[in-house]
Image (cartoon, rainbow, N blue to C red; front, side, top):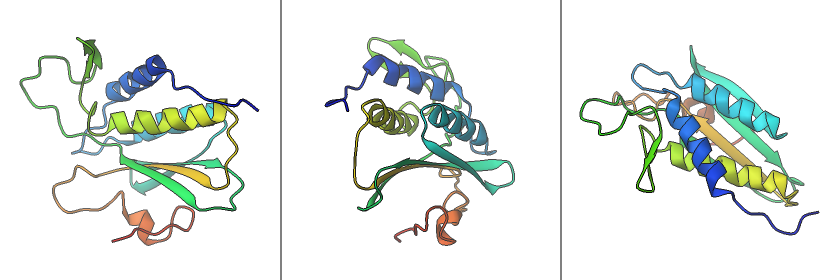
Length: 169
């Protein structure tokens, strides 16, 4: 077993650029392309991935990195959608261009950067063959950017999906 793990900043930035390039604009609700990308990315690492169609054409993604399961689960959650880009961008909103040490693009701060960080942490754990007692769960949900009060991405939590988890209101 490897004793320590290091996050490769370049891989993290590259992953963030890939996520920014995936248009997941809501409205109208184009998150599935990101959910599918994440599921494929995770499965290549041996991380369990499940797509769950929260509503027609709109999928949440659930990842599970299994430990022994003897201790509590740790859940990282983020949303997959971004607001429409609008006008006035200095950089193309769906390119992920780096300028003066900053990455620009729709979702680069809210919240595709957090998704990239969560995924990179999980990848680091896999590569380091990290042994742990609980489980790491990562969810990417749809419709956070809705302004109509619809909770499409959160609805699965009300039914106990996934993994028997429930939302804490």
